[in-house]
Image 1 (spheres, helix red, strand yellow):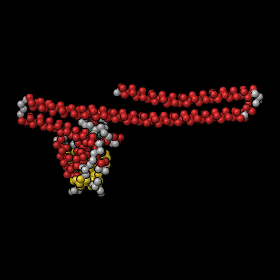
Image 2 (cartoon, protein in one colour; image 1 turned 180 degrees about the horizontal axis):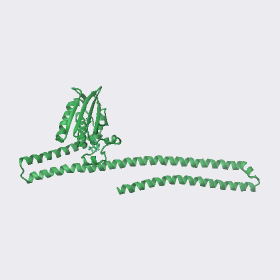
Image 3 (cartoon, protein in one colour; image 1 turned 60 degrees about the vertical axis):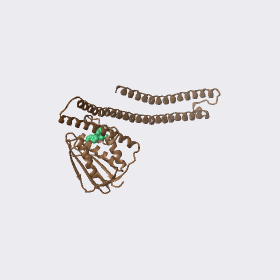
Image 4 (cartoon, helix red, strand yellow; image 1 turned 45 degrees about the horizontal axis):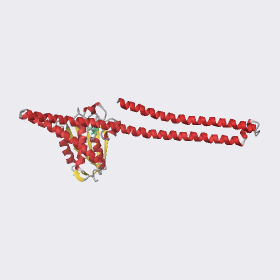
Length: 333
Ligand code: ADP
């Protein structure tokens, strides 16, 4: 943190120095040119007087030699001011480019740092608890009931690790130019499968209300990746609404599109964060997010997959509180 502040101070001081130096050298050149002109003019005046070419100042000002000197001075002054302004503009544009890319780099570095911290935690804690369960099972004789409880906990942790690794692999694959295989799929059935999977993971935590306006909602999707979209949205709705477990999943057909909405009554997402949350590794820097497990990969995957299906995803406000994630994709790819 201190290093970063020192780096910033040094960086902006250097920029300030370069700008001030640019203005200062232009000014100095301008003044020196003026001094040189005045010296040459005085010399010319003395020489012309000595050679008796002029006798009054007004005759001197009208002389060809003076006019030539004057026009050379004017040209040089404009040249210095013009070059100075161009240099200043180039400096400003250059600084703007450097500041922008530096800020982007800092943001990426911070996100990667966040990712590393959360991934370390996300990997370490389930592994530690699985290890503990296995050690306990190995060393002690437990009752049937206790064994069941311990193995159940270990299975939940394994499931958590598995889905984390799945997300990481999927994100890497999507970046590598994943080639999609679209097939006509009943989205209602696919959503139900995702609900069952998520409900098993967050056992007893959610109440899901599924609404659909059609019997058969067929759309061309890639089953494996589109399941990740639905599961990620459902899991987020659960994670970021711990006090209001009612989650609604709505699917409907709208002309040539299928619209899927996941609505929760949780913390909600501030307007200025609604684009950023789709960036890779981005997590809202609030207390609520910090308390919740995650890597910032879920919504990145959601957006990438939905875009590959030629659709879009939006975040809306739920009433009286919470968020709605609205995904729309064309029925035919
Ligand atoms: P993760 O959940 O692993 O942090 P995501 O990419 O799924 O990563 O989400 C990015 C961030 O967006 C989360 O850290 C959270 O702050 C915010 N977010 C996502 N879904 C919701 C939601 N339903 N309600 C409130 N905040 C959310």
